Length: 411
Image (cartoon, rainbow, N blue to C red; front, side, top):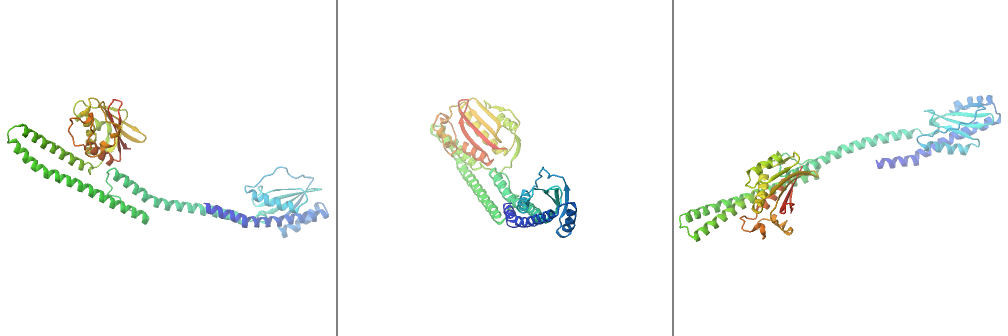
């Protein structure tokens, strides 16, 4: 569009304006000559003879309107440059007062000159005054601009569509959803980016599978000797040393289960659309007493991996059960995202540890961690699961006095 505007500006200033000015000067000269010839012998007969002479040779019609003054009203053309060009040409050629109208007739120009007997009226073809190619040029210029714009939009949309598909596939993969139907397309650079994304996805999936397989194998291999130790200790006397050994073996089994749960935190489970209030109610009904209170003011449906999300919510509820006797779960929609807020009235933790507690094997040395079993993997597993849904989890101080965990999921 900028190029077309520049071309049009150059055309009108360098060519069309000069041609129009030349034509207007020619018509103004003919009108001036006719007025001078008329004044050599004024009268209606003279006007008729001059009309007979100028009409066939100059394409200029001439008529005397006796005792008629010049019109007062002025009607200007849409392109004011036309009127300005003709005004300048007539002003330079005529010494008599004049008036003209370029809008009344579609194909002719009306020019009137004041003389002693009245008004001399001249009718000239429009193409004698203005270059007719200007409007044709504008028409094709506008048509070409519209066509080029439509073609540009078509090609740009075709190039932008593969980029949108790549962005959607990356977003879906970040939420743990299946993207098996994604195929790179579009320009060479976009296809290269899509292929690199698929290779990255394969490497990440391979790493996750190796992590799960390795820890599952270690857990399985260690369970066998632990089982033999349990059988051996069960056959021994119930002494204080034996009881301590059985407690150590139980702790080792708990840790092995925690490691396996951590390795399986990002599962390949498919997402399902669930009613969030009903889904959380089922989780609460399966939890131990005191059961959490559910607060929900609206019906919210969200896509989650049911088993994985159940583990994440259960981890938060279990942590609250260890340190408090009042638990509240609130769900609501805010800024286009779905929030699940789990809070309790326990002792809480210091703000310095809000991020540390999500690190694997981190144990808080505070009132929330005294004489409580665990491997320090619960919140790490929970954050893994939330992130696999494309969401986030953050900690803050609860209005109940304890800790508040806020899960934010995309809508």
